[in-house]
Image 1 (tube, helix red, strand yellow):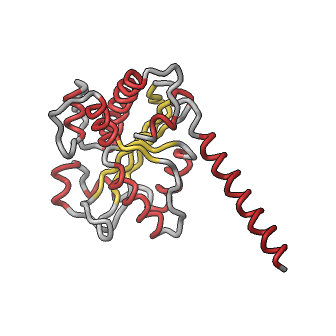
Image 2: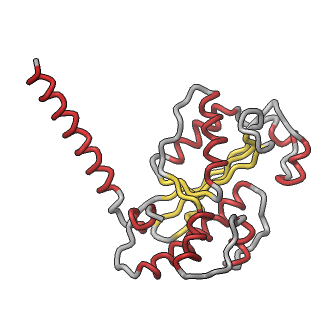
Image 3: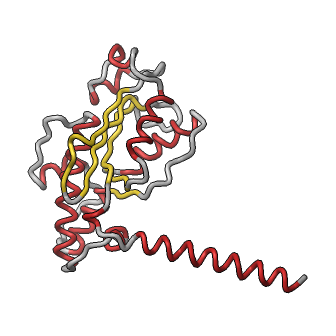
Length: 223
């Protein structure tokens, strides 16, 4: 009996070694060869339990290029609507009355996303809102790897030994820093596009600081 348990333990240990090796090898992939999906959500508010997603905007990015044809934008019908938030996102209730319901919108979004790496600014908010919506509709939570441009930008400042740093950086800060137009600010697609440009500039900066021929996902994620 003891031999059985020892063999079982060995198999389990070997399984996790193989899994760890597979995960580590996936991070050796070049950043340039990776498909990223840069996204933003516009919501009725900031309460994860009671507020809802009104719009998801996303663009794909690969080989240092933002692919406009490979983009995604969907407005979502919601019974709940907080008119006070319309002052920020500009989405009126009438606009979403005849839009796809939450389940259909999420299914379309998941098909677009696939297994790509998610990039967003203050990622935890968007991912949590999406995961709560998935949970409401009986769908599994997102398992995609995620990157936050706010954290990555702060890392470039730390690595450059710049002393004047803030605790938090808004998307407006990055747009100003990188001279990105804010014409469509506070729309899901507009903010996703601003974030995508900022992400490209941050990666370029990190590549220069790293000074390596091949900049891998492992190089990026360790930040």
